[in-house]
Length: 334
Image 1 (cartoon, rainbow, N blue to C red):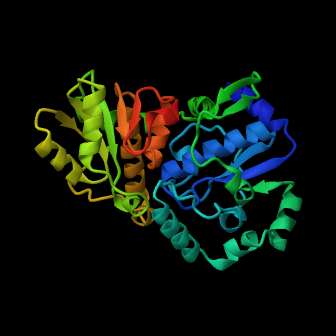
Image 2 (cartoon, rainbow, N blue to C red):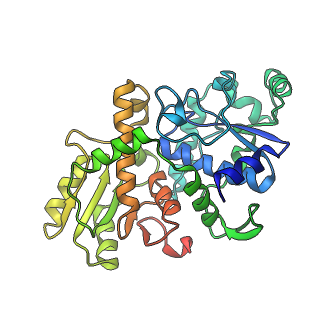
């Protein structure tokens, strides 16, 4: 599947979706769900468009602040308040955590946003605007139909009518969409160049911050146990939002060589803090995040948590190749 094929096929479809990218969640929650939405549209013959003028990860152009143009973008600020993600899908295997997260999400949302869809109704202003703009669907209309996790379930790729797994499809879409612009690419290369990574290394992602409110935190020993079982490589790149994890690893596993771009002042990522960053700090954070991603994606193997959207993205990016998770069995990804 190429960008040219996608654009030609996409423009030929009659039903139209405007997907709100960068609504209110962390970048990879937003991005992974966008890939799900793209797959949903392609398999249901729906034209895919995005609105991202107000993207919480952007500072001027949204998607194009970091990536090459790809999508048909809609620039209509009506979508700022009226096109939204529905109730957050709590990504966790702990049912109690699931209920707490869902309850918190419902309570924090203004009732005027969720009540119409809780009653399976649509507001008059949205109906009118859809008719005027010849748009059939907003994000909330398909949200609960999007997959929570990609699996080995089979879908049809409309590009060549082959039957492939959801993971394979998402990998194809990501390969097509994930293209940094030159400014971002240069900034990532400069950032990675600050550390001298050996040729052979493995990658670990340990998420703390607000993620531990959604899913139970697993001991660092769980990560290292998998790592020791799967490889003899002693060079480890660690992507984490909490520098304390680096200290613990260095203390408990002195035989390993640990590398990281995490700053000593990092004590855990909070989405609410990020949303209040100014342009410079927001851009700096995103470049650091993308640098982590490139190092993890190119590692000989990866160990992380599937309940983290970064861990999920790496599985999509690497198409599950030598990806191991502390919270899911490997046969889930086959």
